[in-house]
Length: 611
Image (cartoon, rainbow, N blue to C red; front, side, top):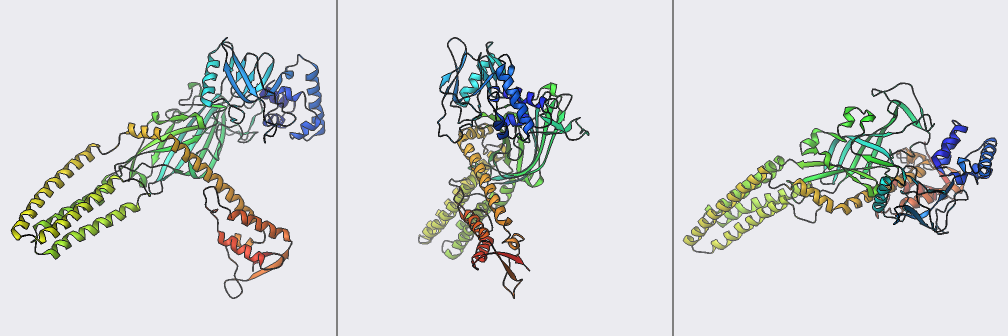
């Protein structure tokens, strides 16, 4: 008997007690169940003695009756692989788990030695069960410590099993993810963008209420005819994790979470609202004629669920959700700087890291930089060319006509750098500013050379330089304007997408970096909570630093046991330890220093309170 069948049977015998969920949580198969005793049932969280005895009696009866469906051996295998034989059958092969492995199962989980199954007759992709004519095996394709077959290769083998008439295939549950995104900020200097997003996740779950896996929390339906529900297992088993659905968010806040069920179509609807700051790798080589692909990585449990691009018509989803998987709006602050667009073909599934990738196109508006950077510099350098018309003997005036534009150009350079991140390559606007500086330096050099030459010869050189400058300078800008208006200075979207594909390792590194930072922030938050919960720094938690008498307040100390001092010092040392990125925890270490100083200022541990 599979885990799901066993849990349903237990829920039928003991309704509304959640015992079936404990069976699923501990991955207990039919073979495990018949070997369990009362102590085993107590170990998985069944507290009542009468219920433990009843479950033991059922398990004993199942073991004594070979025809009972509960007798099906449920065997957990490790380091497994599925191969297709020359006879057209599929076989499961496995290796033993090292005895010193940290996750070795308990007594209720049987681990096999190395071996090979008989021809596979059933594969349940949703419950991670594989069955031959004798045994049922637990094969967790999302647990890479137990699976030694490459994920892509496993997907191909599962596809062939699905097409084979020799194997009964139970596929993963289809899940449809749609998002409504509001862009509230795009910061190219920090390489981040902020969004308010509503995520709607739909999946079909027949007999959800009948199987007691969820219950209604209200009889009032919403505008779509859906009733609010609550899963007995909480968020475990859902297609997405509401807290960490956006993988590349450096700062995300879950605003609301609603879970509903349509009893007619049997479709579950998970509605989430987030406010998040997402990290991105901006390609600014053609700045300000740059184009960006803003990525939104949505983490999905692809081990049990199969993300689809369009929902089945039988689900009867509202047109708002079924039309396209991503809809967006842009705040005026962002629309003034960027033109945002989305094409459905930009959605791509990254099955290797359980991620749905949404790519939104962002093209920067050039008019601002044309009016405030390019045109002023064009005018400044053009006016500097009038130096050639000044008498060669008036060197002071000629130098002033060049130095002032040169300083103006440097000021423009600093202004541009303030709106961009630190880059290791030259952007288009940097190249233009550098060209202006070089031209002004050449004009200065020409001024110094003609000053020492004959007057008639100097005037001839000035006239020739002035004519050549006007010809090249204005002709180059005419070509520049034509290319800018026609879009020739922009990188094509196909090349942007191809460059993004080439940088897929960088994208994965970005996601890993963001998740590591989020975990570090979470760990730091827990440490801060420990520090703040200590009664000895209660006044510091209220952000009111206690000062000696005669200033803003007074300090009162009361003796306490030494355990609080030890605890404070332990938490403080954890806060001072560097995080994974080599930086200290982002907390008010000054407050922690004050607390530790107060704790060490008396022989015993103290409690600081404001008076």
